Amino acid sequence: MLLPNQSVSPGGRLVVGGCDTVELATRFGTPLYVLDEEMIRASCRSYRQAFEGKVPSYEIAYASKALMIKALCKVMEQEQMALDVASEGELFTALEAGFPPERIKLHGNFKKAALLRMALDNGIGRVVVDSLPELDLLSSIATDMGKTADILIRITPGVKADTHERIRTGQEDSKFGLGLIGGIALTATRKALELPSIDLHGFHCHIGSQMLHTDGFRRAASVVMEFIAHVAAETGYVAEQFDIGGGLGIRYTHDDVPPTVDKLADEICTALGAAAEEHNIPLPELILEPGRSIVGEAGVTLYTIGVVKEIPGIRTYVSVDGGLSDNPRPCLYDAEYEALIANRADQRPDTVVRVAGAHCETDTLIPELALAAPRPGDILAVQATGAYNYAMASNYNRFPRPAVVLVNDGRADIVVEREPLADLVRLDVVPQRLQ
Ligand code: LLP
Image 1 (cartoon, helix red, strand yellow):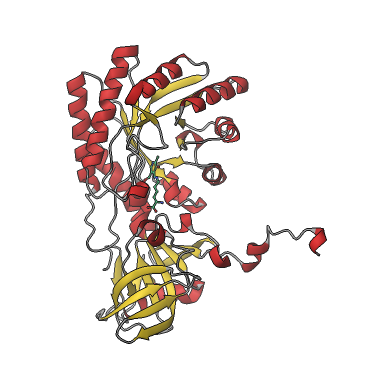
Image 2 (cartoon, helix red, strand yellow):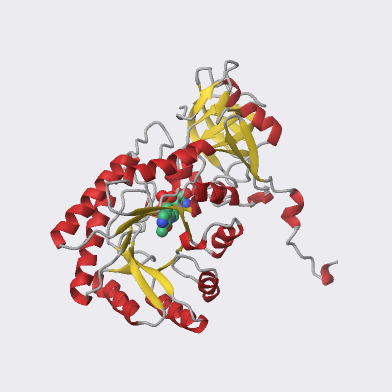
């Protein structure tokens, strides 16, 4: 499977962002994450264009958990995106990159006091409050600091997303958000309206990730709009913003057919319009927080094939020089990927193999895949690894994390250096008594 931004050179090599991937592998080493800048920019624009004119006002906030690096913050800033962060480290990275703090939203089901202080201190745009204790804590911290916290309240809409159960977050039985059951979300709203130093701007929900249908978005839109109407009737407060989260799926394999961003926009905006009319409330500003669909398909991981082991009558294993530590998704979510031999991208994939990583456990990257007669030394390109791969990379087996290269129009720039071996021991301390 070739993605729309990819081609094959006359010499039969996979080309991404105008760069020959085999040359990239030689120049930067493997494993290597390759990111296509133009494709990322195009995804940002497709979101903006899709919602333009369909709602009076909207904002697209890139969910940086999918891939958070300073260079990407620059791209997001240039593409007029806002940014969603969910930890101290993500917030720190955004601030270090000089991302405008007023366009940052802070998420998380457990934000420590220090993180809330850091957010207020840096004037970030919104804190998305996830629980009643957090609301109290934020109010008292903001009061102490003589600041006002601009917030959204995260609602658990009770919508079960059609996706892998480990990436579902909208059902009532979730650690995230304030439930509609028992009036908890309404209690939080009343409280937010009363507490000092809190300025409530509206509501948020996020029901799940890698969704290949728009149903969940539609249901979430109507549930939250109904809640907004209920709040207006009970308290007189009219929400000015509704953040419907992220979650649009991408194409990992040829079987995945995600809805287009245009279709997503049509469905969400129609549901919002219908609910606004039904409940006779004004349309709030709509916010979206896509992560995976901004960067996922723009990424390719290049590996070097080391060992090709044929077990007669059973199968052929192809081992590559990375795996679990640069892509834990197959192990965590049974995630499926496709790949091709980058140096023979023009040849028919006629050999069925299992692609295994190099870590000391099963470490299956792709259980069954046809490749063009793989040989040691070949470069394997695994598709659609831009989201939640580098972001979730670890040092398991003390593998250094790979470099990340940004390609654009034949140019390749390092945006994350390969982790040096020395860094693996940099934080190790051998106490005096063991010397
Ligand atoms: N907003 C919130 C509040 C979220 O929790 C998430 C993702 C997003 C936005 C972005 O969702 P996206 O558009 O990327 O689907 N590690 C998992 C994915 C976890 C997603 C967590 N939240 C994976 O590799 O599939």
